[in-house]
Image (cartoon, rainbow, N blue to C red; front, side, top):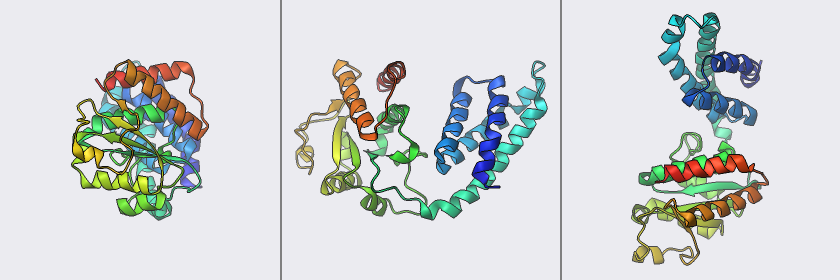
Length: 268
């Protein structure tokens, strides 16, 4: 039986056993993420969440065994073993399939161009974007394990082959971004293929920096400064509208309100 199909069949039992014990905190997110990865057939996502659930089991199996209120200890033992086995087998699965990983040219993607020093803000944007329903393989964000450049690929070759008119680029400007030749090359590559882009700025960005005004993109284009204020909030709503229209997806208002509030708290 195909490995992915087998995991799909086992997932309901895995999820039930874990969530009956605990669905709070990270483990709930890990289980949900695994389910979404299976649904999307996203191997990198599956591998990541299997690893995180395995770590959780290693840290909690003793507590489960000693808990007098847990009546299905053998189910947890089976779960732990299954997760470990799937984790090992999907490592091989990824190696076999990695050379075939390629983004579809006709499908829209988002590229988050950033400096690794600004990971706090980039991570917050990643959560906001994926919370809208963007799949892991629809976002290129090299500082995150679920959106990184595929194994054995040269980053510049990958970007050159995949940046196109259907790419929406989010440029996370910072003072350190302007000092990075690699970041400026990314931004220039997006400009060359005429990708649509949005400018977003870290709170301490110096708009008077001469290097900023020498960049290829239009620096007069209005952008969003991540200051957790009303202007930032309004800009994120505009960003949401742009992304949902580009990908033809919808976000219910209750979920969006939660996502936006969490984002504004995270960038403070």
